[in-house]
Amino acid sequence: MILRLSDFRFPDSGARLFPENPDGDVVLEIGFGDGRFWAEQGPLEPGVNYLGVELSGVSLLKAQRRLRAAGLGNAHLTKMPAMTLLRGVVAPRSLSRIVVNFPDPWPKAGHEEHRLLREEFFELAASRLREGGEVWITTDHEEYFGFALEHAARTQAFEALEASPPAAALRTKYALKWQELGLMVNHARLRVTRHPNVSGLDVQNEGENVPHAIVTLPPDFHLGDFEKTVARTPAFTVVLLDAFRHATRDQWALLAHVEERDLTQEALVSVTRREDGSSLVRLERFGGPIVTPGLKGAVEAVTTLLEGRGATVSHRAY
Image (cartoon, rainbow, N blue to C red; front, side, top):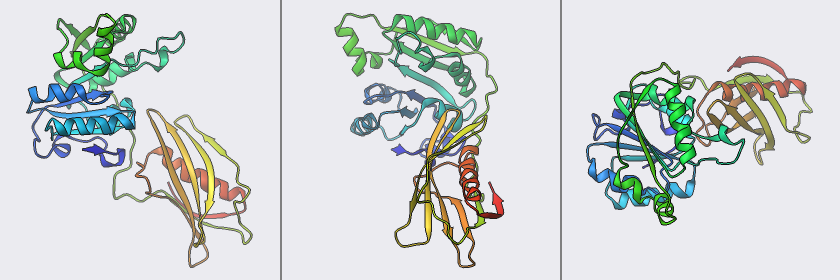
């Protein structure tokens, strides 16, 4: 099953995500590509629940078809950054294994900051693994392999185990490509020995009030001359990209791009005239955004924009 960000809870549980196998171990694969690894490994571990995260929408669909063909029903796929999933969705000490096969090595000078397998990742991974849980890494890139092991060692949260790569890892798309070129494959299994305390995402629970404000707009109010607006705080950046007027209702909608740590979202903030003459400024649920401080900041940024155009604010709830 393909899940959206808004389908998860923060944090979530294996029992809720996999109700047909609530007590099963949960394996997370980061960057599953076309799904070949778990299509082969999954049948060898029928009692294990699988969660896969990927950035490519095309890969998401290919993997879904492959896992269905393999009869793997206890598997969920999602499209988002791995750090977002680990930090926000995965509960502390809940994973039995994290699998990373052939991650992008970012080999050019100055690009190391884009690599996944850095100290921050391993610190977070250690906090999300259960007692005895492991990180499995397979890569053809010798330098990145050493880089990853060095960064894992910095956390003092893992012990390296002697192991060969699983057969399924050697039959993935990239594994076959590199083996045809005669390149070596490096594999490491890192068992967690310490569980750091790493906080999750600050997400508003369902049922709480949607961020909003009530304003009174001036009689001549319009946003026809809107220009991109940026609001920055130490915790997030909000960019109001565009404003649109509804074709039939007295309503505006502003598109907000919000960047927070490990999370980027786009959302709509509407400004709707009410019967009493005031206007409601609120975060719309269209697109399934999750309500974070940055999304609340987007509502605040729109409210501030309206104040700058002559609106008066009678109520704020964000």
